[in-house]
Image (cartoon, rainbow, N blue to C red; front, top):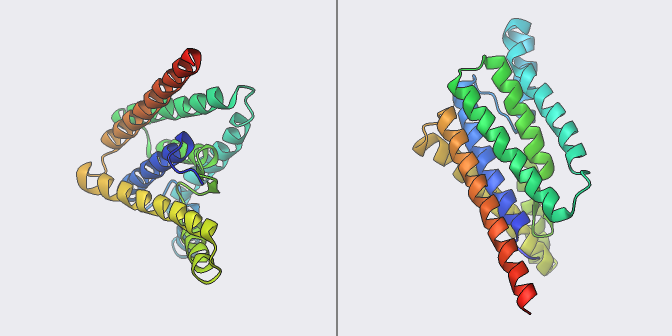
Length: 225
């Protein structure tokens, strides 16, 4: 049930990031999302039925990017390195990707290309950072987290399941971090792409540095003992 582990903290940080990016895309790309593909599918189908392909096509690149990102990142999880090195590498990829997105925002990348790139990043994030404690959570799509939170609260109350209460706390923490990410993006960063991506990259860079420092300190203690 460990909570304050590098996996848990990293997943919570990515959940914050995905919330902040969703606020950015919602504001700047006609209500599109990068993590909630259900919303994109609903909007695509509705717009296609009522306004035709000329309006609905804008929803397609982010969907395709998301699928490709999830496909590629599943392969990244099988990189033959030690778990620690693979985790650090995956977090490093996230930092590089966010840096490239910041550059793309500065360069005013065409809308469809930007949406595809954001979908690619989202598919990657949702695949490789998805654990709080021993609980699998979703760091970008809150529907499942909300359902699982309610399910586990029931089990905790009426079945006296202590493990379920811990799981409910894990799901709730993800939901709260996602909402905080949205609010910070909208209020503090004004949902401006460059600022959102730079802050996200810095957050992950600090996290990676902290993980590295903690690892070095642990190794030193092992050597001395």
